[in-house]
Structures are given as structure tokens and as C-alpha cells.
Image 1 (tube, helix red, strand yellow):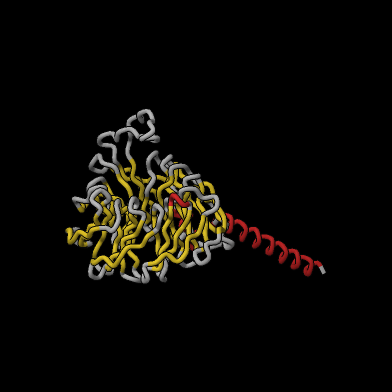
Image 2 (tube, helix red, strand yellow; image 1 turned 120 degrees about the vertical axis):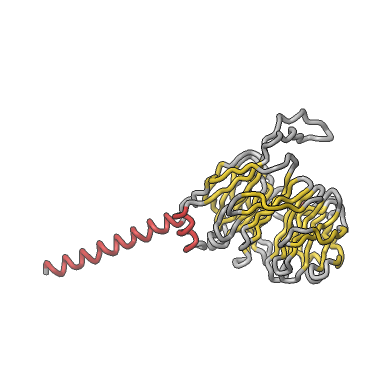
Length: 364
């Protein structure tokens, strides 16, 4: 009788310990990913900047910078080249399957085509609207799309021939765009607080989804596997939207001055880089409702980013500015002049333990 009771108690304690271990493991896997700044690297030039792009698998970071695109080796963190003469550069789209890259030069209203290996300029393509801003390569259709801010339209280019296929009217100011690789391109419509869905083959808008509670969406990320969009909004929220229906699944608080978003399928984290000096990491559970996993202090002005999916490192750029002048009706939000020699790259890395755990259980 005593042995039976002891055995029963032992089994009960083992069950309790197992439950505690599972709970602790779950809590650890949902813990903060521990992102922090590990490197700060000075970059040449004193002009403004916009988007960044990372060449996955090739260890190169492309940084738009005034009238050129800087290319940085992500292993050595040294500048290894540039694509020059891109006035008013905004975005970089990479087409590794074709060995080419595409740059939107907003002030010149052109798309610059360059050789991805040598960085040599190959061609200039005239955009169909003013101020080509964000630019996207859709690998499924082998087409490049430039989203023309002042033109309120989209230029579609056949990337196999580098010829313009046509223009897509939006009647709105497009911001960032993403592709699901399955026949859908999504673009934020900043002044309509909406997301438009584009058929890249038909060159037509098939849906426009209002984003309730999301003002002036700029950054946009996608979890293509789970069919979720992550618009980053000027009113300090990141939304989660079902990419098949446009249904809003929830919102999470982020910092102010957001301009970019990214999604890491390896960890299940969506990021919003905010000009006030924070990077917000968000995870959406099975229901899609997002939860803030970490708010990382970065530096003021670090509003755009790129993500290395292999190492989970996040890259940001920023600079220092003089005090802003007084606001005027023509310039209601003035910014001070950029201080010479302050343009720099910030590299953020997660804690190794946190990265391993979340990679094993990316989708709770």
C-alpha cells in the first residue's frame, strides 16, 4: 500500500514538473527577442536617405542616399560599391533571378536599371508618373512596379525586356508595396488610409480596403505563408490585415514617425522602424491579433530599415540634424539641416538564445 501511494505521488509530481517545464518553455519562447544595437558604422555623404534593401543570401545591403545608392558588405560592414547618378533616390528593388536591380530616382522621374553583380548602370526607364518612390520586383510575374507619389499611379515594367507595359491609376498617393508571390501586389494608399490590391498580370486594381484606425499608412510588410499584411500607420499603430479579405485582425502600438515595416518568417516577428527613435517588434498569434514583443531604443531619425532573414539582423540608418526652423504655411513640419559627417548605419541583433527559441516556435 505504501509503495502504491509513493508511486502515485511520484507520478503526480512528475506531471506537475512537466507542466511547469512546459509553461516556462512557452514563456521563454514568448519572451522579448532581446534586440539591441551591436554596431554603429559611419557612412560617407551628407545627403538625405530613404529606403534600404537587403540582398538575401548575398550579404549586401543597398542604401538610398541622395543621388546614389551605397552598397555595404553586411559581414565587414564596409562600403564595397555604389550606383551613382540616381537623383532623388527612393527605393531599390532586386531581381536576383535576372541578375539586375532597379532604382527609383524620384527627382529625375526615371527607373535606373543596374547589373546586380558589377553595379554597372544598364538602362534608364522613364516612369509614367512623377516622383517614382517605392519600387517592387514581383518574381511571379517578372515585373517591376514603381509607385509614383506625385503621379498617383504605378508604372509596370517587364523585367525580362525592361520595357514599360503600362500604367495603373490609383487616384491616391501610393507608399510602400509588397507581393505575396501568388498573383497579388499590395500597396498602401497613404492619403486614403487604405490598401489597394493589384493584379500584376492584368495591371488592374482589384480591391481597395479601408484601414479602420490606421491613419496615413507608410510601411507595409507581409507574412505570405499565413496571409497577413502589416501596415504601419502614422497614428502610432501597426495593423494586421487578412490578405485575402481585407479584414482587420487587430492593431498594436508602435512609435511615432514610422516609415518602414518588415516581416521575418523565421521568428514570426513584424517590425516597424520609427523616426522618434524606436524599433517595435510585433507578433500576431493564431487569431491574428498582434502583441508587442519588444520596443527597442534606436536613435532619432532611424525610420527606414532592411532585414537579413538568415541572421535576423535589422539594419537602420540615421544622421544628426540642426534645430528645426520655425514652421510656415508652406512648410508646416520643417526639419533642420543635416550635420556634416553624421550619416551612419545601425545594426541590431537579437539575443542568440531568444532567436533560437522563437525560430523553433515562430507561430504560436
